[in-house]
Amino acid sequence: MPSALELAKGNADLIAAVQRSRRLLARKALLAAAASAVPLPGVDWAADAALLSRLVPQISAEFGLSVTQIENLAPHKRERIQKAAAAVGALLIGRLVTRDLLLLLARHAGMRLTIKQATKYVPLAGQIVSAALGYAALRALGEQHIKDCVKVALSVQHLLPPSSRGTLQSTINLH
Image (cartoon, rainbow, N blue to C red; front, top):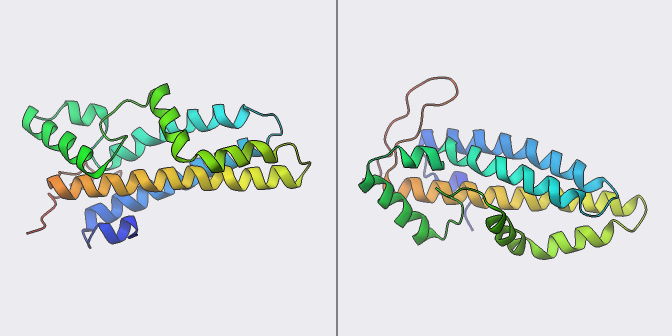
């Protein structure tokens, strides 16, 4: 399976958005690992839900695909993005991160999260394993969302928002 950078097909704007998103993802995954290391069952689930509910819109915004950004588009552009998101199976693009959506994501990462809970009962080594699994689960979910954003942006030739440095982004030109 290709990485998000490979999917970007050399587009400098998409590559920059992927890199910014991955830096954000790495910070949030470290927080998830720290929460997973807490030996109290349930604390990590609450932390993961809170982290994901903030992380997903931030990653989407890097690609111009947050709920607010999509709502501000012309209706025909909004429809194209929604169709593209459905076509690539992107669960999170242009949607508010709700409790139900978080439960759906948890099912996707189900085995890791179940093992993570079980390891909490093993002193010290269990917390280390739980932290590693928490980090890996959030990284996997975040990386999948980044790939989905790249696929959707490419398929609709979407205009990326201005980067954090204030430079203007260009329209994706595949053909």
